[in-house]
Figure 1 (cartoon, helix red, strand yellow):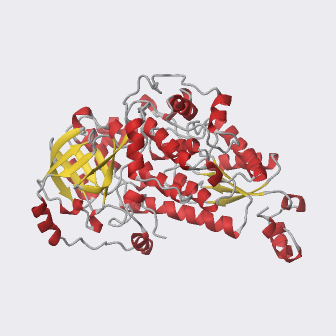
Figure 2 (cartoon, rainbow, N blue to C red):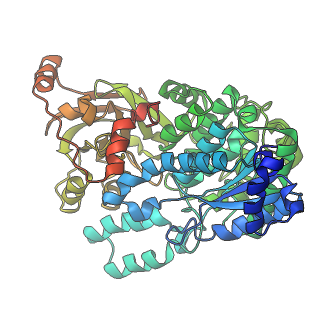
Figure 3 (cartoon, rainbow, N blue to C red):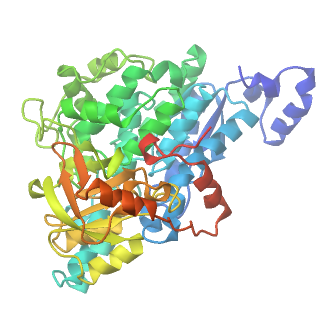
Length: 552
């Protein structure tokens, strides 16, 4: 066992002495050592209950004959970090999470890991660590939050700000939504980034069935955690490691499920970063190729009115996988952390759709194409990303007048002050991975546009990114970013931008001679940031088109 490096032999007597200092017995030292990576904290609603999940995991480990060791991980709440300088630290935290787990698992050679994330960057960070370390590992999330009163969620609050601004909602009504939209612990209740990634961890095969959808408050979530603790000992015994599970077929399975769910656009950042740890490329071209042939079977919030608890009731990710497998959209012969193939898991679960209003069938999909589209053109030569399943029909193809802003804060003021009109496209630049730095998430401006009733008339384009809760014609990840001299840096107030989502096109309607003249005089503003960490991040981070991973 890996842990023999700490426990076996005369020369490891000092190590055993330190383990005795933890209260361990000699018998416990002879059992497999399992690291339990717990991202619990008291500031993130999705993580406030993770200590209870960790205790259940440890109980399962002990029941199966292992010795658990709990270690910490950080996690950022994107909702609390939104629309201020804190959001610059959210995406970079993904790399810190992966690095810190690598440090702890190499310095203390565990035989296996159970990783407990829940919110946005913590899930991909932990998945990255599992594939980088390649020791037996299982991910078990904290589960989704329930929807609030009146089927509301966090996005309802963001949109209420815009409604209040134009007088469509009273301050009192907004405050009532504020108090009831997020009723308790868990990752925010729609198919936002955290829940998308937790569902995809299940689809990839690195989490047990139910991981993505069992509500945070359900006893079944505790039972799932116990089973994960028990199952990790089986993986250690057979030495079934993450790279034995995650293959090229797993990559396509993950993207297909993402498209069927209409998941967060942030998956286009996270999945390439996760699979890169296993040496498996996932390009924007693969996303688009899979999207064109995979039907969109679900419209969960923000695209529709269902929430993750409804998806769970309708059969969860196993039901989605079974339906996709029926049409040949996913491979069933991939291994999973159950020790069985995906096909075997689905057969044992008798996976099937229980509510066709929540999960549509292949014969009656919401759309014949997936929820995410990759756009290219002279404004985004490397690509841009849009959640097409959440875009109104009248915004699928549009010529719009550019309103240019150098920061999210400037754009937000213009939106709330009523300076954005139907037919405008809000362009926010210098918000990419390097330019911000940190590629902040912009739920505030997109929600304000929707809340003010402009989402069918106004688009938003940025080299930054969006929350999974975003709806409307919000086009992000424009690459190359402005800080790297990308064409988005050349857009001027009043330019015409042509958006054509069905034909995957994003064009700045300006002749090449004018663009060349603008490029010759372009002087990108210096990155103004006081944080030494963010300065280092800006030097190391790559394009959003490749997942905003670090240069090696």
